Image (tube, rainbow, N blue to C red; front, side):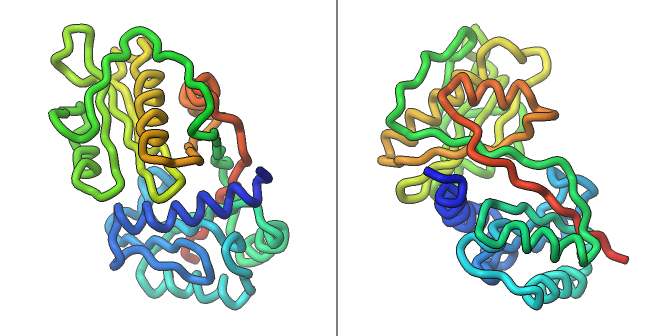
Length: 250
């Protein structure tokens, strides 16, 4: 499939995922794009700021007036900074030009990876004892436990050799025939022991059991090389890169 075709599947999935996580009061669809507005999470970096726009031009055409309306929307909400993630579309180059003309600037791109669910999956490596989904977990990052109660979300934890303490976690979201490997993390002292490899395998297997055909993941090749390489080892391929543009209040 072409990057443009994959973007249509992912952005359709993304809207449902963000709606599940943030709720209808914070997530809306404007001009085919997923627009997230969260005054409580407006940090300097994308990981600490939930004010994102995804999928401009993917599911519907975009005009300059729409971009102006989006900027006005965040300004009126008191958001000092938001991020626009661009995906492949017929309008991509045009949208980038419009963003630059409005003072947005380019950050590092985010990398989108993809695999078919029915592809063969390598066996997980050492340290890969996995519990889940959702029940009996005590991941070290307690914030992720909120995913266990959300529809379509599946939370897994990897445990130590003793089988008592969870030292890594990974989240899967599935909607119809597509799935998304969401947040994942490992305690520093337990890294490079195979926990994330096992968690990727568990989530891919679950997506297949749920009848999904397409599986996506997103990371940053330049700064999260281990995450990126773990996905490649699990049969994912680089689908495309999403330039991230930043708007900051005058």
